[in-house]
Amino acid sequence: MRIKIEIPKDLRSKLLEKAKAGGSTADELIVRALETFLTTRSPKPRRVKLPIVRSKRPGTLDLDNEKIFEIIDFP
Image (cartoon, rainbow, N blue to C red):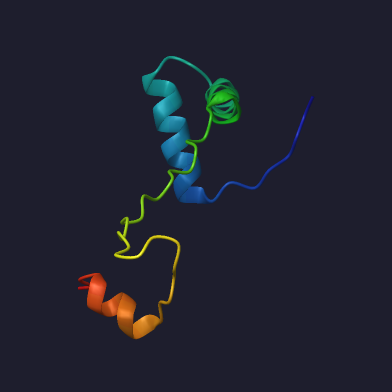
């Protein structure tokens, strides 16, 4: 399959240098780069661990922003 793309001049010269240094053609280098990009899994988003605030009276929750700022030391 043929695809025509416009590559900026400075990027094209880097591509040709890299291909020549690796003993391949620009086409081969582009195909390898695409294969790597398409087969590499992106990392899963990390879960954020929030601080646990112990209640003095379990089962009741009467918090507002002011109380939260008293309990948690924000920077």
